[in-house]
Length: 514
Ligand code: UTP
Ligand code: MN
Image (cartoon, rainbow, N blue to C red; front, side, top):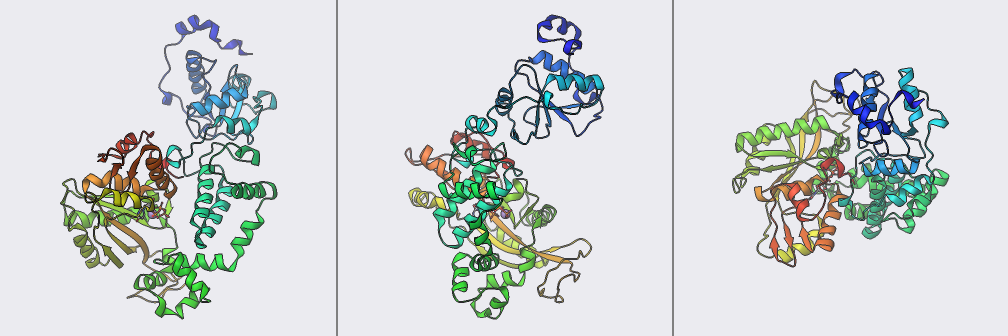
């Protein structure tokens, strides 16, 4: 069957016949749902180029192993295990061997498809056998211990498992058990980075950060579809009340716990105890529904633009950078994190006050509270290096609630009394919504550190600091990188340079969703 195509032995002949591959877009794609990847191992580069051209001429899409779009992997002379290994080595991040995604095929499928001029139906005889299934993958896929050494995309293959582990992490956090919470978060983070969907608990054998408790819960979910313990947590009165309370802007676990102990359970209970609220919390309660409605990317961009306008008015040349989850590629978030700086260090002093005043005058701010810069790096580096684990920084900063105008009076269910307007309930038209916005001002020389720190994810940041300290004897925070033994500051003009100082491979923001 393959005789119509030259095989590797006929290299000489092939070279004569091949004028070189045409531009990839020279042929229209006829089968957009089928994306081929040709395994170069054993096939060789020349023959791969030839088959690629052929497939493209017939309207097939062909991409590299690292493309997330690949649906059909075609190999010649390799075992299924070899193909899996080759794919992983060549940057493939999404292989679900047991789920057959992408399909691992021998060339008979390719030949038949080319002859037919369309993708052939996949039959068992086309498929490559993968001997040890996911366990082979697991053994070959060395998952690094630190999240900052892993590439973690937003979309991953173990959503159900990570959700239950995150519920457990949240519950532990509500109980003040930070170590237990961290253990569950780390377990979830490792699962997010796996290039396959876990289907059996044995596949977790060699993975780091998966403690006994996490494994037990994963096993329950895999075998029974749910974990009794997680279900109990989710339905417990305390977990539910804590969740409602901690979703109020300005309310942490301590306050929420105290309210629970005092017998409060719902927002209505709180309303009756108004006296107990700080100013921040009062605004949090007032705008509860808006602030717990996901912020859309378009909202974040609109707000960035407003702040850019304000900054442009107050200090020409200053920049505004959207950080946080949106920089990692998320489509929604719980707030908008914006970093302000100016290329001439020192110019940023006094900027925030002016920006806030401008925004306030234009009616953009429902609430704001500012904190001045308290960073004193060069006075005592040892002092802050000890406290760098917390992730808190010392930049001048404004916590605010923005009044975001909605285009054309979109219907939203605000359910809160909006100051200066009518009481809005479910379905009542409203022309604006409340959005949490953090404005952070950084001196230019600290900007790369601030950007790295404010891009997250939290797991990624925590592990960056832990890695720096334990593996490199350096203290990293949102301001500086300090070598604890050489007692020097390591400067950086970009995030890339910080990764270089730490001997880490650069991980772009979209792959920091650990
Ligand atoms: P967020 O809490 O906003 O998280 O902090 P996020 O990833 O953007 O998530 P959503 O989408 O809003 O829900 C953003 C990053 O800023 C860091 C956090 O550690 C996180 O990585 N951060 C936050 C600080 O470094 N310091 C702070 O004081 C607050
Ligand atoms: Mn955020």
